[in-house]
Image 1 (cartoon, helix red, strand yellow):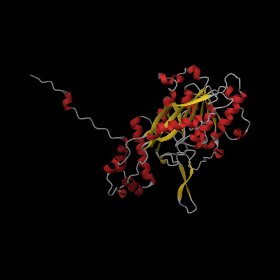
Image 2 (tube, rainbow, N blue to C red):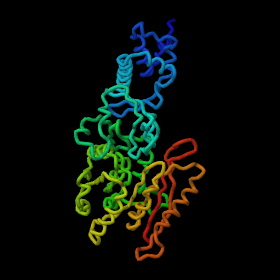
Image 3 (cartoon, rainbow, N blue to C red):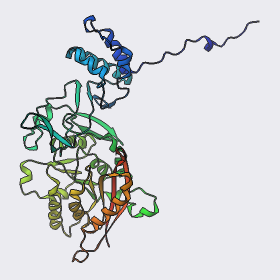
Length: 418
């Protein structure tokens, strides 16, 4: 009698797929000439000490900080020519592109954004000097591809349209929103995605303790948000997607250009005010009476309070006046230097939220929340001809860990005319 055998019993076991970076290293090593022998360094060791993950910002692949910095890799790289190393980086891009089905052309290693820039002192030794106010990604390690000249200017007055065109730009999409930036000149914080999503759902709440937040899309359409540290539009775009209009301030010309490009990619109108126009008599009330979704001032945010107060005086009694619902203060390690101006902007509206970003020790979050409430309350005169304003810190959002035991927090302060 014939016996029916299970064909799967004799099937060949599935071959385990080799990770793209490991596959690239294996193929690259096999093509190295004999004279560049690996010596004491073994292929298995190189593969084990290579990065296992990466992030794509089209058309760039970004490897994690510390990639190829182990002793084995440092020793090997020192023995090889630029051309030989370029062969490795090119092979990695090819393998990653093949796995994803999309062609990537640039490769770099990510590094943290330094709080201070390093400059040479009189003795020629590098040391930390001025604060990195523009949050320039000076530690980015370019491995492969043309990222544009590193000699392009970063000072606002010196950057020309031709410089923007000559730079390398990348993009990504988070929460359905496009963001664009030049990686040699501008930072991108992927970890802010959670906070950006929270902004998008801020007014869609069923929490009975936060019913003052509940607002329809039609109500939001008549409101404004102010972003004191706009960057490439991290939170600006979340407010714009809610249907609000946004006034924002940003010093870094490269971030402003990224914001402008990103706004257009999302289909939002944008007006950038910079250079000689800043020194002219800008009538912000005329811009507000128009329909531009996002207005960007490329200047110090110390000007925000004055510009908004002057505009409110001009528009007093007019329909469509400057009613600010949100003031975003997204700067680390603390945004406190702009709180007084932010509070002055917020308290003139019937109600408004200030979103204050801080790095805080996990054990000190509630204490800091109380300190912030007291600080903001002290900025509202108790006896004044102005309407009485109450302030409370409704919520402390833990966004992400910044360091062991330290959280990037956002404190939601609610200002309300009583």
